[in-house]
Length: 199
Image 1 (cartoon, rainbow, N blue to C red):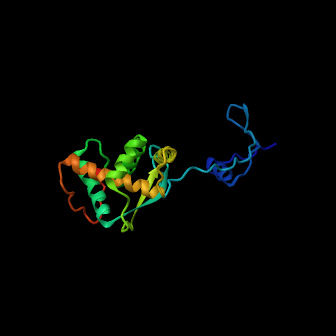
Image 2: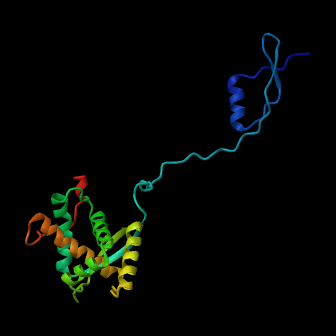
Image 3: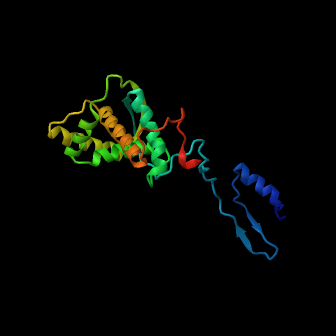
């Protein structure tokens, strides 16, 4: 009986790629019999592709989108304070969003009577507080604000909204920035705030 014709390597590869099952035995020159195990092609596993828009690094906190309403003058001072602090306050962040979140967190961390003193010094937000500044507030800061506002309410101090609380925090931090830098008035900020730690 004639031996079956031995297939070339390229023929076997072509069949394997096409999904053909090889269940025939082949003989080596020494006469030992080798059997190839019949296998059905395993399903192709998807390999992860590079994301078009990579997810933010895990070190970044989850955030909540919020707005704060300020007068044009207060908004100007707040934006200026971010830049002044970067040069005069060690460890001050190089992005406005992080600076604002830090200011809000600092106010939330104070005692009720300390916050009330700040409110009395600053006064209620003026009627012209109609300039909106968008903020991304980290979850832990937003939760600290909720707790601070709850403690304030128990002491009889009620802010109309989170925006009002944020307004006190940013206006207070603007005054603090001017004091730290030894300035009577804060300089005019650029129209578009830079990311200072990337310069």
